Image (spheres, rainbow, N blue to C red):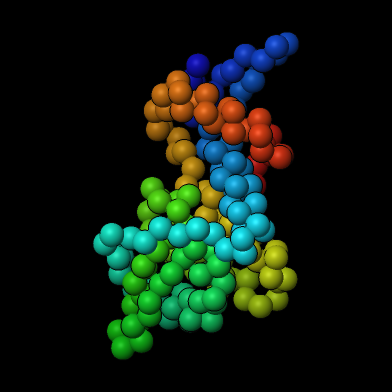
Length: 166
């Protein structure tokens, strides 16, 4: 069952489970992206049919330029236009194809600008994957169908630490 369009109420063999849909989907997405990156070295990308142009501000644009290689391994390909300080998003991680490209890039660039170079590469990548997983997850109020809820529950069963929020 669904409660308040936020939770899934599921019956296990000997208990009832109350699951936050967003937190569960976020953990599943995060672990999938982390596994894919560990296996292949980068995330599979999906080219945008219509590239998205944005003006993120000087700090974010500088973070984009400084970390362009890291962004590409995370499946985000951008093109900078230094003349007007804009960025164009050309591709996103395939797993996050339904997320808002502009919002995703702004959050990732904010994280990069804040973390700078002081954190280890792996810690920084995991934090960015966590931010990206949030964007690709079910939002409160979204009405999942019974098959979608069942798929999420199956994914949780196959996901390490699925009972923990990122």
